Image 1 (cartoon, one colour):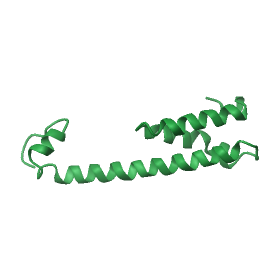
Image 2 (spheres, one colour; image 1 turned 90 degrees about the vertical axis):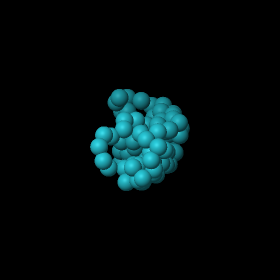
Image 3 (spheres, one colour; image 1 turned 60 degrees about the vertical axis):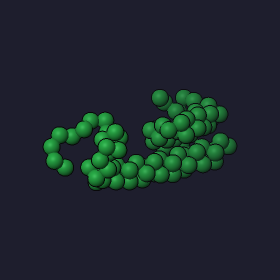
Image 4 (cartoon, helix red, strand yellow; image 1 turned 30 degrees about the vertical axis):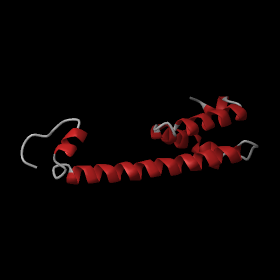
Length: 101
């Protein structure tokens, strides 16, 4: 999408929609929001809606980093302790690896 063609009000509306949609366990939308609107928020000449867009971009980046930290922690813990958890670890697994852990 070419943001240059959109009026500033629509840019703000789109940025806000992606920010709010990220709370529906869709952190990928926060990544898209940061990538799409980073230049618009920090490098373009100042305009009225830019302050709000900047806030949404910062919050999207913070939410994305939080999601990445939580997901990385969970994956590390799960991979390390899955075999020790016995049946619970197997029930949480999508596929059960064969062999001795």
